[in-house]
Length: 198
Image 1 (cartoon, rainbow, N blue to C red):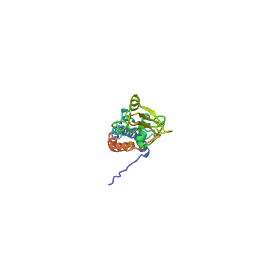
Image 2 (spheres, rainbow, N blue to C red):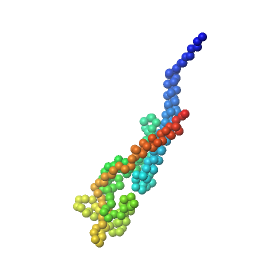
Image 3 (cartoon, one colour):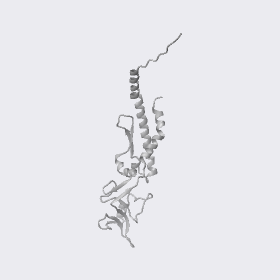
Image 4 (cartoon, rainbow, N blue to C red):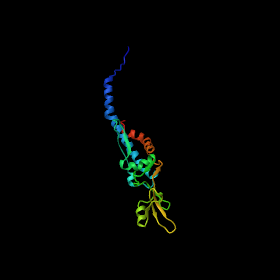
């Protein structure tokens, strides 16, 4: 006496159902996981502004966003909003700021002079120029052919409060890509467990 056990496999039906599963269940779940990771990466970037940047204002803290990718596959793109990108680009990549660039004068970037009163982060306070001008300071060219300086005449010597320079060089100090990578690595297992069907 013998019994034969047979397996039948309908390859076409399996392929059709697999495609339906990927399209209808797996791909949307992976997109939800990617969105979850994008949102978490944005929160980590916002928190990191307090660590890497000097006393960031809300405009800087809110510079980050995410959106779904364009490639048809589940993905999310984390980015710096356009209005903040000119400022944060130098903080992320480093580089040189010239006259006419974001946050410069038409003659060049404004930097503290030797007699400037700086804020707690080592920068010129926001109203430093207006307050100096109200106190009697004036713009003067200290070197012929070079940009002007904001000077305040004094009893002993001229006080140099701010100087316009031809360019300033920035070193990268905000590790955008590392923050996003670390956020994804930290939360990927949770995101997949939360959104993938069991």
